[in-house]
Amino acid sequence: MKKSRGSGNGSVKGRSLTITNLVKAYKPGKPVLKNLSMFINGQGVTAIIGPSGTGKSTLIRCINRLVEPTSGEIIFMGQDITRMNRSKLRRIRRRIGMVFQEYNLVERLTVLENVLSGRLGYISAWRAWFRKFPEQDIDAAFKLLNQVGLQEFAMQRADALSGGQRQRVGIARALMQGPDILLADEPTSSLDPKTSVEIMELMSSMGKERDIPVVVNIHNVTLASRFAQRIIGLSRGEVVFDGLPEEITDDILKDIYGGQDWLTHGQNQ
Image 1: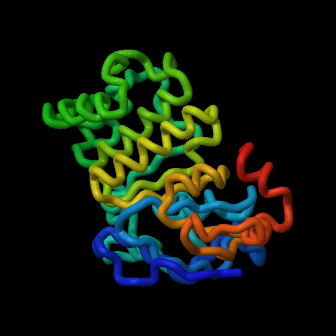
Image 2: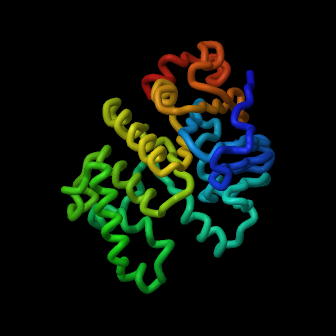
């Protein structure tokens, strides 16, 4: 049961994302993503749901080439990311913010230094090595920490924070890049339900404030329906649903999750 959505030209054209015939096979002849195509508009929250192992994380990581696609096109900012050399890829990655499931912070560094690392792609190798950031970047980092509610933790080491606080640092770091899109790979899977809601609220509000699209891979169907304007359901590496949260029914969820107990799957993970 597949419905198409978002095939227009996009209200924020430069920030739209077009994926065409994307294939990723970690082993020859066994693709995880199977000729996957979609258009993501240049604004709002798009949630990608589906059972474990269906390719959700692979899809998110192919977009910025943390995982190398096997074939297909990924067009962002008018450029095909799959065909970029290392220099061009480094430049385009500045424009793609990434929030990770396991935070990916440098634990021995302070919260402020972790946020500032979002600017490493913009400064010289010498400045990056000695972590010499321009004053305006430092001011912007403090402002972001205030926005995510962590200003009082700026000088604490990252390993002193709770899981929810670490994820807030991860979001602030991604936004320090000044991105044109924000990707999030299962950002709530390690968090309790209350903190998960807070993290989704934060990403949604920050994306809206900056007028950038947010694409989030998430297990929790209830959270996805609450915060996303569009939901894409993956099953066995293919899109089986693409539509509005209110269009999702029990039958659609069974189609996405292969007849599993979707209530348990969607609400408890």
